[in-house]
Amino acid sequence: MSWLSNIPPGIKNIFKPKDDNSDALWTKCPGCGEMIFQRDLEAAHQVCPSCEHHLALGVEERLALLFDNGAYEEIDLPEPATDPLKFRDEKKYVDRLKENRRKTGQQDAMRAAHGSIDGVGVVALVQNFKFMGGSMGMALGEAMLKAAETAVEKRAPLIVFAASGGARMQEGILSLMQMPRTTIAVQMVKEAGLPYIVVLTNPTTGGVTASYAMLGDINLAEPGALIGFAGPRVIEQTIREKLPDGFQRAEFLLEKGMVDMVVSRADMKPTLSKLVRVLLKERRQPAKPAQDPAKVAKLEKPKAPTLKEEPKLDKAAE
Ligand SMILES: [Zn+2]
Image (cartoon, rainbow, N blue to C red; front, side, top):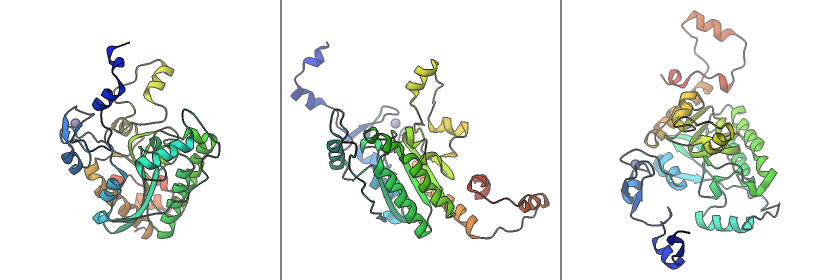
């Protein structure tokens, strides 16, 4: 037993590191270890000025950064039955929910809003990792469906900012059922011919990566974001092999083709704006006759266009 464990709790609390909600003046960058002045960090939207490490961004900040003039309308989300399994681990699930609702000021992990990006109406979903690790439960399934319905109704693209530890174990099988449910939500948007874009933020793992977070017409990721199904430690223990550097990070996944683009927070809005414009334009305007006869021959093949067959983004954007 170390001498530290003998310190009375009252004294320990004085030296306890403050959590992100506290009004501490300085934050230590997890990337380079430098102390950053809180106000500078806020001005840079939680990106380290020294090493560009992307720290977690709050839901409101994320929405304000995305939409024109920071203006958006929050979408009311349906509330599913609370704790149908009467689950209890160290705490009752209902108590855990109450605590997280108090801490974050929101009903569950996912929030949805409608607004415009450079004048184009968009529905956005933002997952809050601070709410039980952004876990996917019934409420999240409801949020996805509601947002998808709103997107279809408003003829607006759907963008989701994912951040999650995976399925919510307190809801057992009901949380796993949200994988097909959210997939159906995504399908609704796609069938309506509307773009569905995913932005993977740090961290996006588990059942979320195995459902809606990997189904984007285009999957973007923030730099350095951890993205994967099982965590690196679990994989290492299972395969008994050392994993390569940067494994499951956004850049690694880009190299392997799992992610389409790694976009810094500063470039996120312009990139999304360009993407929704390109994708919407393509579906709303009839295809122009191609100049190249080889291309014409290709176009004449009676094949229904699907979202997966979209031209590569860089070509489309030019
Ligand atoms: Zn840094």
